[in-house]
Image (cartoon, rainbow, N blue to C red):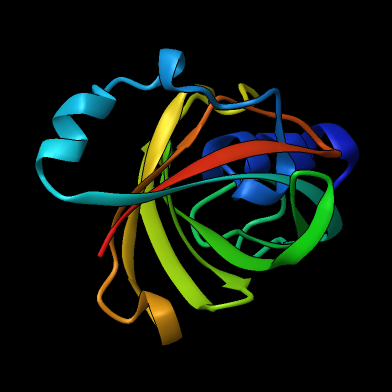
Length: 165
């Protein structure tokens, strides 16, 4: 098991999941213009907050942070203060400074899947980045788009899903 500081080394490199975010993600922090997105068919913006329900670090290979290490994350999701769903994610370090993460938001009308590859120095939590929406089920069966994350911390935070149907 990794110590807290070593755990953050893995977490920072993974860019974590949306389960460990802080501060709200607003359109003003969005690197893509909302108007530009709308012209491509944006039909839904979902703003959520999250509260972490679990984080497990798996130290694969050589002891300490390294290629193959994983972090498994779960969270409860909230919309306007009311419980709105859950999230599960797995991030795997694939290079000394890169991590591949994938996860799923389970929402009332279906599931939304996401992934990203993030380069972040060990020990530095990533901030202000996007993840790709890769598909979904139910009302989200044809969804694509992205989610914007402003910052990461241990306890939870906020995110915005920009969903194109």
